[in-house]
Image 1 (tube, rainbow, N blue to C red):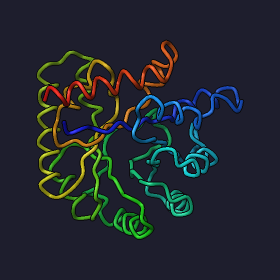
Image 2 (image 1 turned 90 degrees about the horizontal axis):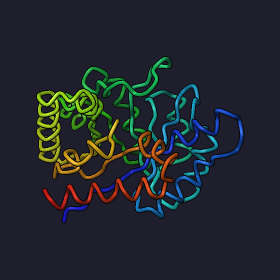
Image 3 (image 1 turned 60 degrees about the vertical axis):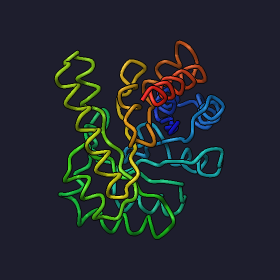
Length: 248
C-alpha cells in the first residue's frame, strides 16, 4: 500500500490555552500525543498577530525533534527571519490576512511569483523543505514548479464546503480538480500534500487520490478531542486514511 502521511495541526490547542492566558493546554504535549497516536508530522501556523501559536511554541516544537515540524507562515521578512533561525523541517507558505478567521484559500503563487521567489530561495538554501499552499489550478501548480518549491499543498477548503452543503456536483468537480492537479504535480516532479477543513466524513475521497502523499488536519481533530480525546481522534483519522488508500 502507498501509505499516506498524516500531519496534525495543533494550532487550536494553543487557541484554548490563550483563551485564559494559562500555560495549558500545552501544544507540545499535544504533539507528543499525536505522535503516540500515529501522526507522521506536526503542523503549526505562526501568524502575524500570534492569535494561537506563539514564538515559544515554535521554538519548543523545533527543539523537540519528536516528529518533523511543518511551520505554516506568510512570506514576510519577520517570518522568514524566524524560520531561518529555528530551521523547522518544512515551511508551508500560505496567504494571510489579519482579519480572516482561518486561511480562506490558496496562495496566488503565479501572481506573487516575484515576491515569493526570494523567500523560497532563502528557505531552501537553509535546508528547509518549502511547500506552497495553493488551489487546485494548473497555473498555480506550474508556478510552484517555476519557483522551485519541491512540495505543494492543495487547499481542500472548497471541497469541504461543498461536502457540508451536500452539493454532489460541486463535490465531484472539486475532487476532479484535486486529482488532476495532483497528477500534474507528480508529472512535474513535485510532492503533493492536501488539507483544510477535512473531517472523518469527507477525508476518504481525498486520501484515496494516489498522488497525494500527506494530509494536514487540525481544527477538526482538536474539536473531536474535546469529546473523545486527542489520541482517539488522531487514531481514528489515521485509520480512515489508511482504509481509503487501501481501497484505492
